[in-house]
Image (cartoon, rainbow, N blue to C red; front, side):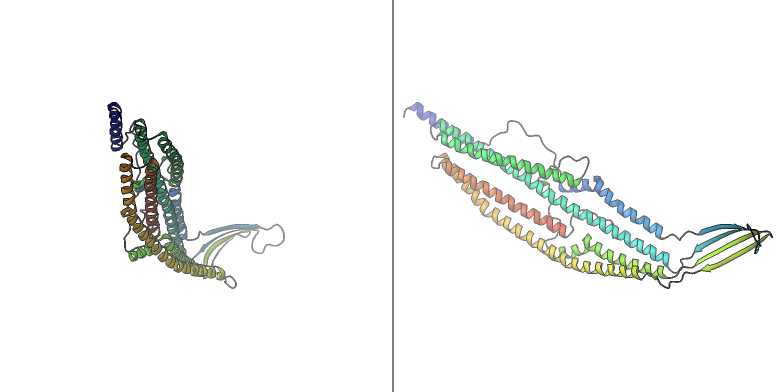
Length: 427
């Protein structure tokens, strides 16, 4: 081997070492995309979504029913007349009669109607709170999906950068005679496969983004750039008992069942009060012509509840109250199971992620480092180097999947224990 050839190979190996140690530089800096945090997305949804505004109107509409329930019934005016067209008049040739009737709900009917309407307002509030809670949970799950779809794209882009670096090294070694065109083809084939996977991951990220935008329903929002760092930290306690007790206090579906029972009982009370006969006070005057005269009438009329005493309406309300009470008991049992199950899933997911990061991910990183150093000195083939990289890529995928499992488990705990920042509409 002459001096010139030796110098060329030494120079090539120096270039290999430099290219391995120096990270690849992007041709142009990527445009900085403003990120949205989880709290910002939820705040925009609550303040700008027409759907949320539509839900809130249900409470306002129910409050108008309370206004109507507190009003007394309107009096009635009855005006009539008669004229003799033949025969002997009994009292006069013509008559004009005017009569005013005023219902008197003095046995608690108005108060019972107002109480029933107020109970239905509380049901409307719980209904809207349940809608907000469910939609907020959907939005949170969609944010987790969007964030980890983005993380998968970032991970695959990192793998592509590593393959590009390997290709430059292989090309330099091939120029120096240390490796052949086969190594370049192997790297190009692996890069093509990963690029296809990256394209698919970008499509999945776009779909997740579109789903989240649709759920938020903010007319001004066209994209939701959420990444893993944008997700909020776990909002709850690490104590299972604290989470269960909080869920039993805050769950809107449980509140809806309890308020439904109270509303049904209030309606039963209303129907009982309405079954009490409501007297009506009436007064009137009769003008007679031929001969002229004026007659004054007054009195009280009371309906006779001989047949209809609201038996069916009262029974129906009581049955609905019993059903709502039974539903509330079932929900209490379900809520305890949901919170406890979600809490255990979160605990196991965090433990699995910590173990994998401390053991398998560290081992894969060390394996890759040794494979790269061994390849540089020519003791490893390109197949062995790519195998080490594939091991690292699989470890990253596994770490991402485990982290996503943790995030989804935390989201389920926050849903079950009602930890999302969605303010209730009433007590």
